[in-house]
Image: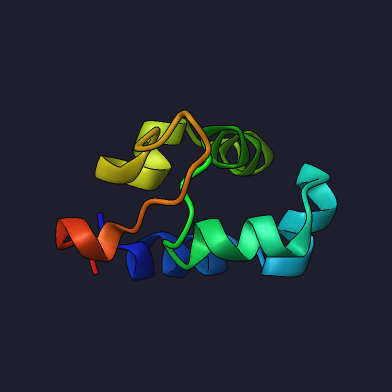
Length: 81
């Protein structure tokens, strides 16, 4: 699943970046980086998925859990843009 598809799916479900920040308790920067595909911190992905009630792998597709150590990883490098 492409990064833009994840964002589109969340918006269709009625979620904005601000509502995800409020619901997850994560910073706007963390949520933004995950939604824009620049940072794939598994705990932020898990928080977003839990907030919207969709399993992480179903929501984020191939880039779910792509980085459990917390360093930066870009899906563009993997051809997912």
